Amino acid sequence: MSTPPPDPASGEPIIEVDSLVRYFGRQKVLDGISFKVFAGDTFVIMGGSGCGKSTLLRHLIGTEKPTSGSIKIFGQNICSMHPDEMHRLRGRYGMLFQSGALLQSLTVAENVALPLQEHTPLDSGLIDTVVKMKLEQVGLTGHGHKKPSEISGGMKKRAALARALALDPPLVFSDEPTAGLDPIMTAVVDELTQRLTQKIGATVVVVTHDMNSVFRIGTRIIMLGTGPHQGRIIASGTPEEIRAHPDAAVQQFINGDPKGGGDDCAGETLYRDTLLGLNGTGASTSSQP
Ligand SMILES: Nc1ncnc2c1ncn2[C@@H]1O[C@H](COP(=O)(O)OP(=O)(O)OP(=O)(O)O)[C@@H](O)[C@H]1O
Image (cartoon, rainbow, N blue to C red; front, side, top):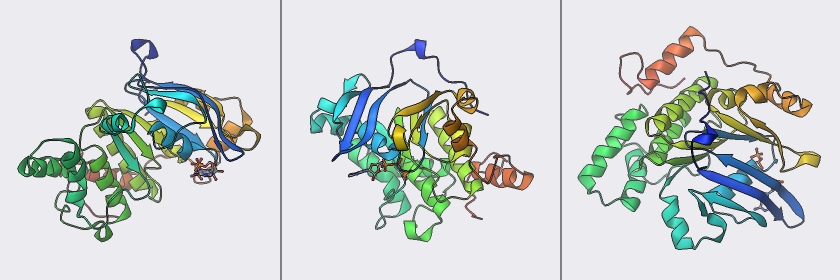
């Protein structure tokens, strides 16, 4: 069900990474990484534990600086950017991170309202309206008044998604968006992310080691190596190219999941469609497995 990747010839890259190297002390964690992400891509960064995925993502969002190499986002080199300029640029990112996604002291609705308060001149009435709309899109109507501690893991991920997409950002970064979720909720969050980012025409960069997610959502994929290939791209291409990749390490990684493929059974499909509001019952169902 993967979407055809955008045609790279159709425009300038949204992200351009060139010869990126990062040392932590004497450890070379990223070793000459180069790639381009084009508008409309869902660009997946995958690889084994410790290969440098999260480190690479932190460089892309500008919270860490490389030892050498360059990163251009929307044509601007973020490695030499002034912090104020970087802050402005971040207003154009949606960020969906596995840890600390929601502020525990705020309600779900207040969390979703945060980027709107920070980056728009909207008054509180309009913000409330946008927040309601965003919560409805992720199937959380009626849950806005709850604290994050009062909702399930899957609902938290959906609330974080609503917050990441509150400003309809053209670029979304996502670190392990489905970590800790069961396969059904993983499919729900993947599909919601796909549906909502496609609706606003966003380009997505996602770090994941969930193989079902990789092939469900990815339009282009890179895999980082470990051991002697630490922090280097050992495979890159479309989902089809990655599936057929001749490197044994790539095949071992993509086939290593003992749970196997991601086909839905009828019950799972029904449950997922209810959450997605695709079965005509609206998107407000919130029951969790
Ligand atoms: N701030 C840091 N200081 C020192 N070493 C670091 C730092 N951040 C990451 N590392 C090291 O860099 C390597 C890559 O870490 P990173 O978290 O990027 O890997 P990952 O691929 O995201 O792993 P996982 O899938 O387990 O989350 C690891 O050896 C880690 O210990």
